[in-house]
Length: 361
Image (tube, rainbow, N blue to C red; front, side, top):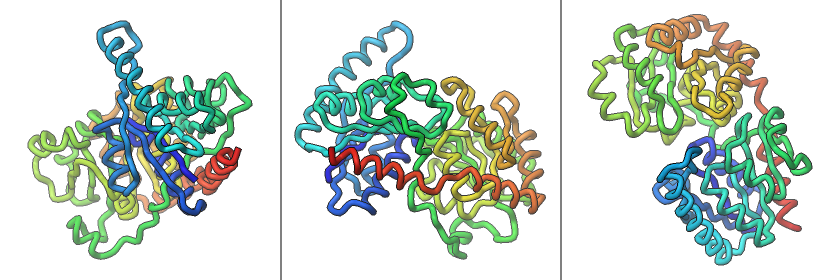
């Protein structure tokens, strides 16, 4: 079986694709995979590091207003259509799978026009432009939240599967892990990150935390690659704070942590719930239809998370929320259990079943 998988731009598009690939590799003998993304995009680093074959095409987000960038994006995406067609003709896939981002629009559109079975997966409660465009052409639209259904016109194509999660999240913490991070076992550990590109608001709050932290917890914080050097220079040293530009082995950081602080993107929530972790969620305010706040409210209402809006976030509000949770072991445990109740363990299997069935037609 030969498959092309495409999705890019953010971890929320890339990691569902990887989870699908992993499940198919476990199920399908002699599976051949080609990942198509953007040159120099986040997906290229992640995918090639996993040993998955990768090819790039031209791709660019489409501005909503008329400008020089709009015309530039039209030219670039039109070029990407030709490149996608060439890759598909050469690879001859049995099925093409997309997980969002502008790059997958060209790939799946061309595959559908070439009469190759196509599937697109939407991880958020509100679909992106690429996936809404593709819903007219693909054979199946897989959604992760039931409320997402209403935004698609072709209802007969839609299947609510939920979000797939990568199979490498089981991690047994060792003494070496504590030693490598230079942290003690008897102090709670908080892991914070603002998505694959970092979060300005969370970074600013973390800067102020250094004045308050006195040993009640450790903070492992991912700044985002572009913010790391500046943040290191601006922050005073504190033995209880560890800064990282980006976390490749996130499963280790999840496992060693008692509490997670993150934005409320769909994939992050899927990971948190599957690992039964308590969390403080900081929804990004600029997301389409404010879907991150909706996602976070669902977890808060179910007793799995606390929520701080970006407009209310500062080092004091963040510190108080952390202390309120990590100082109460019963609350920490209950929040983790409630998060676990929101997890669906059979997502990857269901998606793989749909893909395998379609590929035979």
